[in-house]
Length: 179
Image 1 (cartoon, rainbow, N blue to C red):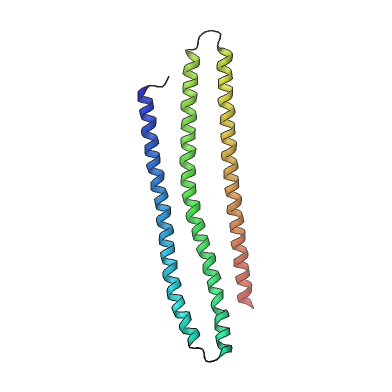
Image 2: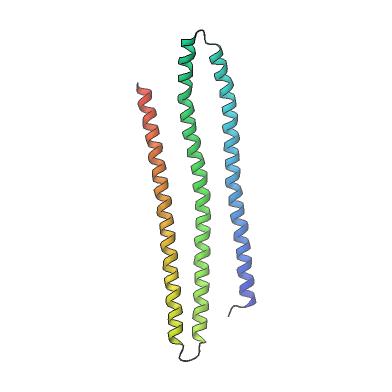
């Protein structure tokens, strides 16, 4: 049986974890807000400059060549912005993942302690039921570990795909500059 002190300690730990994760979430939001403000300022300044450049064009041919030259930096900045958003999301997600893994490991340990304590105090003849309970706990632990591994593999695959897409964009920019 769980004691009042154990329940209180668990509740206190859960509240501390909640506040810690909330702080991490706010840090991620702050970084996104800062990124968006910086991107908005830069876009506004560049837009004003580009409009002036286009308005100063002497003929339609020059205006068309200026407009096509202005699109290339825009795609580079969009790719950079996407990378920064991905980095913020990945960092925040990793913090949450670490915390959840620690919480799950602690909960499993506490549950196993309760099962062991219960099995030591179980009446004679209940060994089969205790073994069955321990087997169920082990199976649940295996399922959790498999789910965690799968989630990590999915995240690694997504990161790999993102990096490959970024490398493709960089290669395309490099090729375009050589022409």
